Image 1 (cartoon, one colour):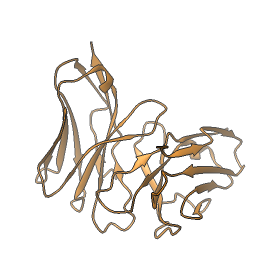
Image 2: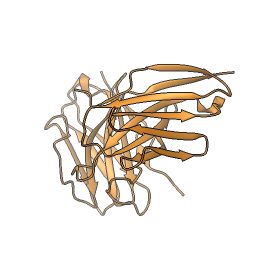
Image 3: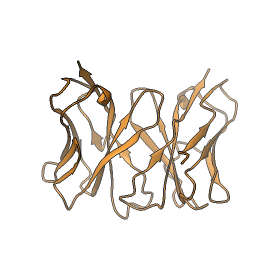
Amino acid sequence: DQQVKQNSPSLSVQEGRISILNCDYTNSMFDYFLWYKKYPAEGPTFLISISSIKDKNEDGRFTVFLNKSAKHLSLHIVPSQPGDSAVYFCAATYSGGGADGLTFGKGTHLIIQP
Amino acid sequence: GAGVSQSPSNKVTEKGKDVELRCDPISGHTALYWYRQSLGQGLEFLIYFQGNSAPDKSGLPSDRFSAERTGGSVSTLTIQRTQQEDSAVYLCASSPIARTGQPQHFGDGTRLSIL
């Protein structure tokens, strides 16, 4: 059973516009969420995170929104740039989880069109 | 500074052989994680180390998988009697400590192909 779901395998956005990547989770114990970006043949790179005590976290062009009641988070990138073309993974974990490993979604391939 | 280093970057081997994958974490990082990514899937958590200790090995897919870490630095993931379903990219990550909220820094992975 997938605990973190990214239902859009791919997303195409025009350069300069806003990219919105979505993520849903089922485990209500998750209290910390992260977004990673991955280029082909490279490891994932940490982008931004959010704790469940917040509903928004912003870092430059990247903003993550968390809706706990809906068990939904989203990553907004504005303005989108060609270098943003990559696979984006949503990940979740919880305090006291013991293993502290991250639970990842399957990823969304973002394509920025010129 | 140097990031997480994994070797080999690619490994092709025959079914039934043993393989050993190596991870060299960022210097000073005490926490080390292993994940694998099968084709079309997200990353699957396998095991983590805090120092040389692995508190929970339940994420390892079968008893053919084992991992160790010595000297609080380099870790090896060993797969015995490889099967075709073991084909995947094996990723290692490290963080300063194993604590919620500490972003994990990933290496570029080892692409393992079992013929």
